[in-house]
Each structure stands twice: as C-alpha cells, then as structure tokens.
Image 1: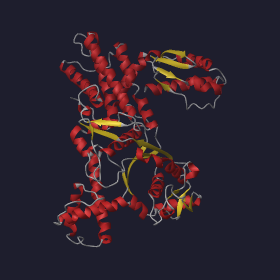
Image 2: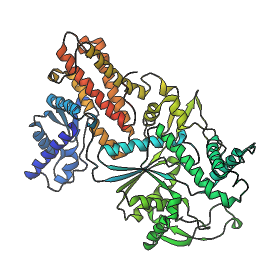
Image 3: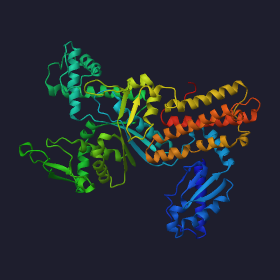
Image 4: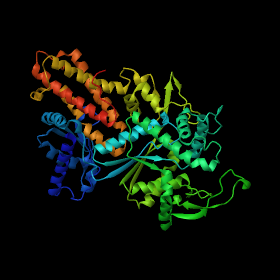
Length: 573
C-alpha cells in the first residue's frame, strides 16, 4: 500500500545515511511522520524526518533534508522530492505507483486497508454498560456506536478485541427496578394500579416481566415479605431488561462478546481480592474522610473507612472503596471490575459518558496501581446528543418513561443514518441529531452524500455493462491528472484507518469518506462541463474501461470505510 511503501523508502534512506555515518544508529524515529501536505500544490506526501532527527544527528535540518532528498530522488517511485521551509521534504509520487495502488485495491478488495499493526495485542473495549433498568434510549446511542466502530477498527488493524458490557446489577437502582416489577406483577394478577409511586420506574416495558412472573409464581409473592421476593424479582427484572437491551443494540448491529455482572463479581470475591492487592502495596488504608464542606456537626459523623490513596495520583482527596454499612462504593466495584478485565487483556479502553469525567483520574490511577502500570488504559468521554424534533429538544427521562428509544430511532430513520450521524463529530464534542437533516437527500446530509457516491458508482457500472463496456486495467496508463488525483485520495485509506485506530477516533473514517465522496462527485460533475472527462464515452471504449476500473475500486474503498462504521454501501438510492 502506498503509504507503507513510502514509509519504507524513507526508512531505507535513513538506513543508508546511518551506514555512511551521517546519522547515529540509535536514533529514535517514532516521531517521523509521512502524510499528505495541507496544501496539495506542495506535493503528494510530506515528511518531517529531517526536522525531528537533525538535532540528534548534530546538523542543521536543511542540510540533513538535502541528503534525504538526494536518496529519495533516485527512486523510480518518486517523481520529485523537494525541501521546503525549515526542512520539510515534499514528495510527488510516480504515476506508475498510483496505478499499482489502484490494482492493489482490486487485489485486496474488502481487505484493502487491513493490517497486522496490532497483531499480538489484546484490547478490551467496554462500551454502552447502561444500567439494566429499561430499554436503550438515545442517551446511550452515541457511546454504543463509537465503541462498536472503534472495536471494528482495532480488529481491522490486527488486534484481538474483546467487546464487553458491564452490567451494573448490584446497586440500589436494581432494587428499585425490582420494586417496580413487583407492582407490574400485582397488576398482572388483576390488581388495579392507578399510579406508580414516586421514585419507581413507571414505564410499560416492565409489564411483560411482571406478567411472566405472574405466570411462573401465581400469587405466591403478592403479599409475601419484601426480603422474600426481592432477590427473585431483581434477578428476573435484570434478565428481562438485558434481553431488551440486547435486542435494541442488535437493531444498531451491535453485539458484545462478554456481559460482566457486577453482582457476580462481588459474589466471586473479586472486589475483596482487589482490596487485598492494593493493601499489600499500601495503596488502601483504614482512615477517616475529611468533614464535608457545608455540613454542620450534627449532620456528620467521623467513620473509619477503607480508603484508596488517590491523592498520590493527583486526586484532591483519598477515596472510599466501601460505605459505612460495609457495601462497596461504586468506585470500589470499579476497582474490582477493572482488575478482572486487566487479567485477560493487554490494553483497556472504556467508552464513558462525559458525566463520568470526575472519576477518570482516580480510576486510571487505581488500574495503574493494580497492574503495576503494565496494562495500558484509555478512557474516551462521549458528549450527550441533543435530539431535535420540529426544532424543539426531545425530552428523555428513564424514570418518567418519556424518552426516545434506540428502537424508535432506528425504525424511524434507519440504522445507517443513526450510526453514520453518530460518527460525524469528534466524540467529546456536542452533537445535535436532527430528524429532518439525517433523512434528507442533500449534500448537507453526510450519510446520504457518501452512500449516494457508492450508489452512483454502481449505477454507472450497470449502465456501462448495458453498453457492453466493462472495467479493465489494460489501459490504466491513459488516465490523466484528474483521475490520478482520485487514486491519491483513495490511497489515503490505509493511513486513515491506522491513525483512527491509534487515536481511538473512529470519526476520522467518516470525515475521510465525506472527502472521498466529495472528490468523486466533483469528478462526476466535471464530466458535465467537459465531455472528455465523462466516465462513459461511447467513442472511446479504452478510456471508458480504464475510468470504470477506477470508479469501481473507488467504490470498494467507500464500501470498506462504511463497513468499518457498521453502515451499508447502497447500490441504489
């Protein structure tokens, strides 16, 4: 692939300079980059090799750049190599290299852009992890799509990926869910329920669970003591909600490999093991928290609690891992859960809502302590999506039962529109989801614009076949500057995939596809003004077959990129 070929050319040029004694052998090259220049008029590729290595080499960056340029200019793959500014090197690649890249796309097909860069490294990606208290709503959607697309990206570059969902089924909210289910159980037995008590979940989605419990147990638990039915109803309610959540996620094309239960984790003693590990390193001790600000003496009582030394890692105070009643705090449970995950993966990635930003520093510190810094841990914070309908924000409240579910959204606008739209902005930036815009057939709707590019290509291929002309690589050498520019755009795909995976930013693929679609549409439109640039030219079958080959494999790149986003490549629109 083109970028890999030229990375190798630069490495070989540097190796030659090392062999000649112009560069030290032990130079760290990790900051050497190769990417398209911001201004295409400067060339096809640009490298900062001379600038980042000159200081260690003990010479001026422009002097080192001249030596590298001399090496690169001698290559048949390089049309020209020029030094610019303080030591940048701009390259123009040969037409033959571009034609070869197009044929590489043909040869690799769906695997174009795939690499082994991450081979041998297992990554656990935890995403969604919504409390099992109801169906998935749009507040969960963005993190679900970002996490799923990131997992696909990481697999595409060779990582073994574990897709995980953490089921928070041990907290007070699950007891509330069980109480809410008990009401629906009594309702299924024939009791008239006029109003759901304040603080419980009123949604109709609990009715099927209540009905199933009534069928299974009859009136056995109608008037039974709270402690007798609570564990049974809690387990049944969580199971029912998780079935619903899996079905909702399936509508988005999302499946997880592992569903980890918080309740099972505590029952297995994993939290106790994590505490013991941290105590052995003097990172957990028994102490008393400082008196909360704004409290009177009557409101507060000093209680000795097990505290994690999070101040050693930049936190403003040490954090309790257990409550005064002996139950684990949310943070304490998180410690145990991450300790468990780290035993099966080399890297951990959490996709969290932005409302968790206050806990990032301490949980990263705890994971570093538990794994002795051996497990790489990254947290991506996802901003909420503002849902608009008729110009007005749509209200979402799980407790009131008034919210837009993922199922509602997918049924209304389709999976592709939901997934692509969720990846059209950087995850930590605010986003509006406008029903009208995500379904309109216009340039302003990114998913339509990209899918239309693929559909337009397929339509062109069908029309050409009717004319008896088919894609062929035989006459690719006749392609001109406009066509070669399209190949340059397509050739960026492997680099985009690797950079998106490395930065944990799948939205980069969406941005790239939009640019690639724009380049194709622009080329198509040029044919309207300049007949000699039309893809199908009846009087020139050789050029037609070459351009058909070009656009067919441009379509392959679009299809590959959409697949990484979990979006279909439309053949007709």
